[in-house]
Figure 1 (cartoon, rainbow, N blue to C red):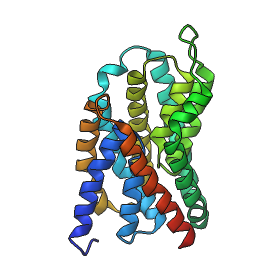
Figure 2 (tube, helix red, strand yellow; figure 1 turned 120 degrees about the vertical axis):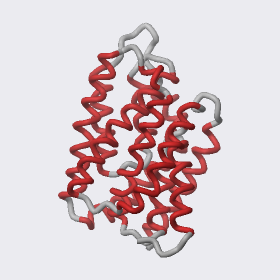
Figure 3 (cartoon, rainbow, N blue to C red; figure 1 turned 135 degrees about the vertical axis):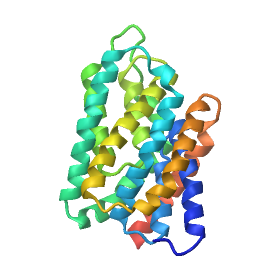
Length: 252
């Protein structure tokens, strides 16, 4: 229960920014996680609450980019199936492993997310992309989405960044269409975490109710403007915040 007026205001504002950043640059959930910690939530509760609240934002982004999902139905079905199974496994791992494991691992996951966001363009250049005449690397693509979804089910921070990096590496298509597929897979994974966490996880539903409307609106706006807004500034803002949270949790 929130006791200060600025806490719900903080979550409303951060929710909108998170939904928009997820659609444009990825990593918006790393803004919500420290905001939830600032309200006094334990890390595990903040993580599952964040994961549940982020889902509707992906719905808004997917709707805003739905035209770019047309075509390549086989790729869509295979990656969607991998996202469902991987996300479910990640959720189960979070629930069955001791809370001390999560407390120990989450700073490293946040730090890894910050590094991936900071150097995602450089990493893509190092990895390269498939030749335009070559078929999609289907096996690599499906396995990559599967393991990224396990990560997303366990700790969702920067899941979008990991998804888009895998898609760029393994699929031959325009960046606009791959970004739309990233939003779709994020929505699928979030739907799984929503169901699992709603049943068995300690979700703070008051915080979810405050975050959901603005993440939806932010995701829709961000999805519409994804090809017009510069993502670099937003991405590095999230990187700085994520790095600060990781350091704080290590020293705390």
